[in-house]
Picture 1: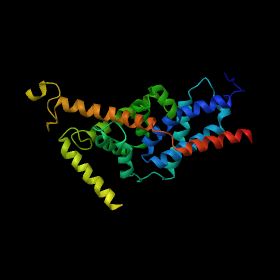
Picture 2: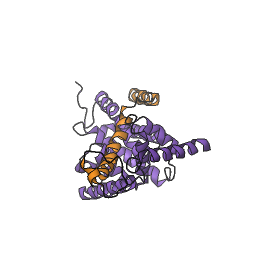
Picture 3: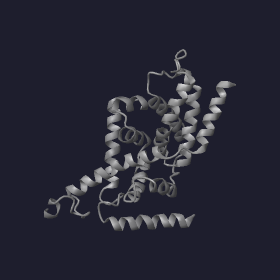
Picture 4: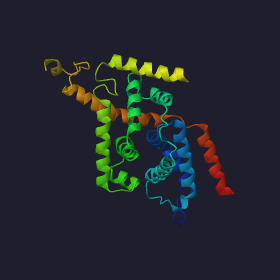
Length: 196
Length: 62
C-alpha cells in the first residue's frame, strides 16, 4: 500500500487513479467538443496539467471530479479561442456513433450527437455530467463552479432542448417513420462523404 | 387511441400527442446519451496515451 506524501498522493497511486479515469475523461471530452481528435488532445492536456498539479490532489477526494474540472477549464479556454466553433464533423460523428449501442441504434445516436453539439456549452456540460457521467447535481455544480440550482436549471433546459430536437422525427428517426428518417440520414452522410 | 392501448404497437405514428411516441422519444435521447458516453469509455486507449504516461513517469525520475 502506498502512503501519502505531504498533501499530495504518492506518485504510483496518483498515476493508477489517473489511468483509471482516462476513459471517462475521453467520453466527457468527446461529448463536449464533438471531435474525437480534439477530444483526445483535450484529455492529454488535462493529464499533463493534472500530473503537474499532483501535489495538490488530495487522495481522499475524487480523481474523476478533480480531473473533470481541469478538463472543462481546458475546454473553455479552447472555446474562448474559438477552436471548436462551427467545427462539427459529420463523418467523425458517424464514426463515433456507429460503434455505440449495437445495430439498432447508430443512426439515432448520430442525430443525438449532432443535437448535443447544438446546445450551448454550459448546458451541454451539465447534461453530460448528470445525464451520462453519473454525477449528482451537487458534484456537477462543484465541477462547473456554480450553484446547484444553476446546474439543475442547465440540465432541465438542456434536456428540454434535446427532447425538442429529437422528437417528432426532427432529429431522432424513431418517432415518425423510422425507415424514412434512416434513409434521409444515410443520404446526408453519403453527400458528406462524397464531398470529401 | 385504440392503436396506443396495446404495448408499443403504434410503430411510430405521426400523432404528436401519442404518449407511446413521447415516451420513446424521451427514452431515446436519455438512453442514447448514456450509450454515447459508455461507448467511448469502452474504447481501447490509443497508444498515444501510453506514450504520454511513459513521458509523465519519466518526469518524476528526472
